[in-house]
Amino acid sequence: WAVFAPYVAAINRLKAERNAVILAHNYMTPEIYHGVADVVGDSLQLAIEATEVNAEVIVQCGVHFMAETAKILNPGKTVLIPDSEAGCSLAESITAEGIAEMRAKYPGAPVVSYVNTTAEVKAASDICCTSSNAAQIVAAQESDTVIMTPDRYLARNVARQVPEKRIVWWEGACVVHERFTAQELREFREWNPGTRIIAHPECPPEVVAEADFSGSTSGIIAYVQHERPEKAMLVTECSMASNISDELPEVEFIGPCNMCPYMKKITLEKILWSLHSMQGAVEVDPGIADRARLAVQRMIDLSR
Ligand code: 13P
Ligand code: SF4
Image 1 (cartoon, rainbow, N blue to C red):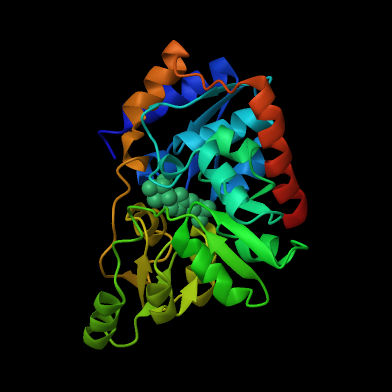
Image 2: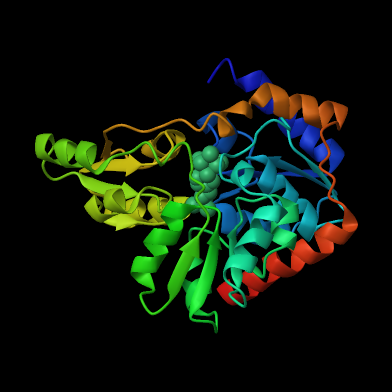
């Protein structure tokens, strides 16, 4: 921590000077999560929080689609992302043309797009969802057929939870979660009896089927805080366990995890630079933002 202390102090000082607030995703490293974040959460919590910010500047410590979502919901505020290259394999997997393709293939079916998409894709969709409300959003659609984009695994996991709907999907995947296999989980459990396995729903369905619980990043944290298992394996991004292990000394976090190369682009140094220079402001075309806002707001209204 000594090496981080000067950055943490400088960022917290600049935050006050700039009237800025730092929204940080649960995948940020501990020095960001504990040291400088004003609000931490999953995608849904950060989107809702972005509608309630009073500060003039939002520093989004997460990936680009999260900063865009904050800008869509707060067009009048300055939204900074410390590294504009912090993308997402899901957001990169589909464009507005892809949405049009799906609509042509399944006429009349509503498009439910994961928030892990660009503003253009959100604008072309009927409603958004996150990992914490996907089943609820899909179940609320009137149509029997529902198009889910872009995560094929989230769509298939939701299909299990909402069997009354015919769900069709885009073939995108998260580079972090698609790498876990059911076989490795089974082997892990065999060697570590009593381990509670908790998987994010971006994992393949056969991986989720091996888990004791599946939920959004905040859902995973809440589950561990509530259950306090002796041993827990978080089948998700590596910072999750690091961020909560100090407050849960009785839980031993074991097992493999994967790093998100995009989330890990956000560092204290870059946060400091963005607050100092005020560079890296995210802009969204106002016409696109208006349509994207409808899709995000519909989701927020249904999730409250
Ligand atoms: P959550 O909404 O569960 O935080 O997920 C966001 C994400 O990018 C997970 O890979
Ligand atoms: Fe995208 Fe996966 Fe990284 Fe989340 S963990 S930002 S879904 S690549």
